[in-house]
Length: 329
Ligand SMILES: NC(=O)c1ccc[n+]([C@@H]2O[C@H](COP(=O)([O-])OP(=O)(O)OC[C@H]3O[C@@H](n4cnc5c(N)ncnc54)[C@H](OP(=O)(O)O)[C@@H]3O)[C@@H](O)[C@H]2O)c1
Image 1 (cartoon, rainbow, N blue to C red):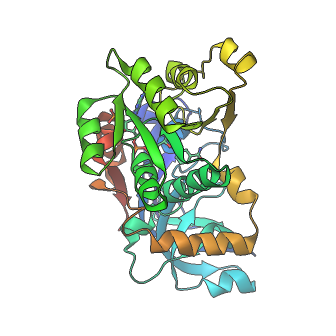
Image 2 (image 1 turned 135 degrees about the vertical axis):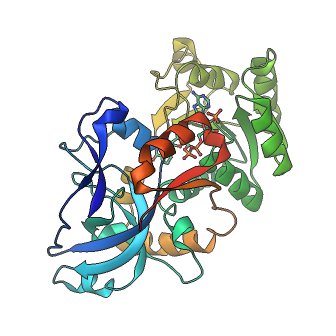
């Protein structure tokens, strides 16, 4: 099979090469997925540079999620049930990922796809939709009526916007460019702020006060986290779930000490691990139902596996334009 293989965690294009590899054989609890599509996500960019929360032994095939068909399984009932099925699948934590013609993964990391869902959307079912679902769930369980979010024009940010409209939550959506603000307004967002404008901090503080926004979903890190935390009322909670700036998270110590504001991390892998297998199956179904509208991702381009470098370059040049999918076969 053909696979994109990473040889060093340095982010250099020459460290990622297309190579021929033998097709792996599934053991007990495992399935072999013939991959059809896999997206590039910010977590993949971090992984390539060695900045992600997991580093796998090298050389390794990158890619954390995708979709395809189960073509072989281990000798156990759970894996055998998936034989022949189209699935959304997540890569194993220590072995090869989705940017290849075949991937071996655990049966528990697969979600069978409904006929109505094309592989291309199915390939993006896990990372962003489940996270958006989880974050909105956290806000609702915490009794919050309003939230702040950064990088709001991202695929996930747009899911948060649509979910908040569905569940009657107010969002304060922070972007960094005027075109992104316009995009969110056309989606019906009422409160959109551009962090690059001079009155940003004052307007954010005023909106947080007006809407009583005491929870923030922050994906940029660095100084933006400090600015958001400062603008929110006493006792607010900032949930850091991304680090798009690749900078350490900043905060004014006075906000933490005298204002009882808190910074927490969120990682989907941990959130899912805290749910029962039945709960995860139920969640997979709920998310699939919403994949056509509330939780859909825009696709800006499709690239054959051999053009993975072009896909990466195009994605990094314009992330807001939409996901770049690597398509196999
Ligand atoms: N913790 C978890 O479990 C988890 C799970 C899923 C996703 N995430 C995180 O969710 C975030 C969004 O992911 P996605 O797939 O939805 O992203 P995406 O669709 O690729 O979009 C990324 C967005 O972030 C903007 N951006 C990039 N760098 C930025 C910076 N330094 N400052 C401000 N904005 C910046 C981009 O704007 P431009 O077009 O201007 O570059 C774009 O609008 C990422 O941080 C990702 O790691 C976390």
